[in-house]
Structure formats: C-alpha cells, structure tokens
Length: 266
Image (cartoon, rainbow, N blue to C red; front, top):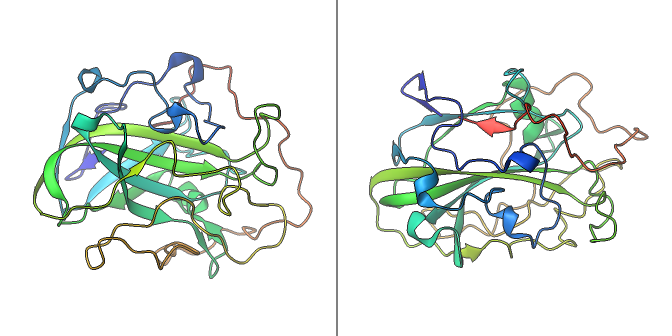
C-alpha cells in the first residue's frame, strides 16, 4: 500500500500466502482458495490498515520479490477487480461486493493487466464514500486469460482461466450508510462464463468482465458497464499491444517451483 506518499512494508496487512503455492493461480472457480488464495483465514493472521472512504491511496503489485519492476508475466492478459467483505464474516457466505473493475479497452486494445505492466504494478484507488465504516477484507483479483480458450475441468488442469486473488485487512473510516448486495465466493464464476471462457489468441474487440455487477452509489449496483469495463484512464497503448493472430501460447498451468518469487502487493 501507499498512504500519503509513504509505502507500507512489503506484504504488511496482507493475509499470508500458502508457501507451497505462493505464486500459483487458482484454476477451479469453485475452489475455496478463490476467496483469498491462502489457508491463513484468521483475522489475527495480520493487522488492519486504516483507510478513509473517498480518499485516494495506492496499491502496488509485483510478480516476485527480486524484481519489483515487473507486475506479471506479459502473456497473462486480463481484467482486474477489487471486492470488499465485512471482516467478521471471514469471507464466508453472500458477503462480497465489487467496488472496482477494469477489463479490456477497445480504444487502446489493452487489458487492465497490460496497463499495470506499464505502471510497474502501481495503481491508485478510492473506496466509495457511501460504504459504511468498519473492518473489512479487501480482495484484489487479476484473471489471466492466456489458457482460457479451453474450459477448465479437473482432468485438464492446464486449461481454463487463471485466478490470482489476494486479501488485505482494512479498517475503513466512513460515515456511509449504503447496504451493497453481497455475493458468495466461490460462486461468482462458472467455467463457461463469457469472461472466463475466452479466446485471447483469436480476434476480439470486446470483453465481458465476469462476476457480479459493480457497486455504484447511484444505483446500489451498476449492471450496465460490464462489457469492456472502464477504459485505461488515458493510458496510451504499448507498442505491439494488439492481440496476435497466431501466437505461441503457454501449454502448462503457471505453477512456479521457485518459492522466492511471490506475487504480492503492498
């Protein structure tokens, strides 16, 4: 995290990673690991970071500890989302609501992960002012689509989208009184959803962001802006960023054996 221009310690306020899969994705959208990708589902596993609704703060993501300039493998194109759930729920039940999403921008031909590659994994975000104050789990998620052209099945674990969720604990300062509709995780995706089963290696000019609708102050939820997500805030496209017609795509799931490399955020 970056608060008022100051970085927190790397991994601080983050629910600890499972050491055996520190940099590996969740493949099954019905796996309980889709919540936070950790077995440390205890509020005492980390501290709470104090944030104020309506005030901008920074998030920073990196693929590994050694290289803090690289966000993710370049082939791992896809959307990014942020969810909240009351901390007391520990993420169980229909408690998660989406407060941020960015997908594919047809104008620049960039997925949100590509935009974060350009910013070296750094983004800024503001929690809506009408969200009530209290303790929350903040769940960030990126979905890599490089093997999403085929549906995931337990017998073909190399196929399907790759999910990279992580959870932080926050104490939100707010006078908001909204009551966002909650959804259960796992349960927000199926293997056949348009944004989960998607051919990144074919021609496309749009993308449907998967999962529940984005919460908005005006509507309570916003079911309209699902296709294409939000554009890249004026980011210019990377050279050669258009999707290739006949690329060589990865054939194996992303299971790293080097435990020193971690996808983390601060």
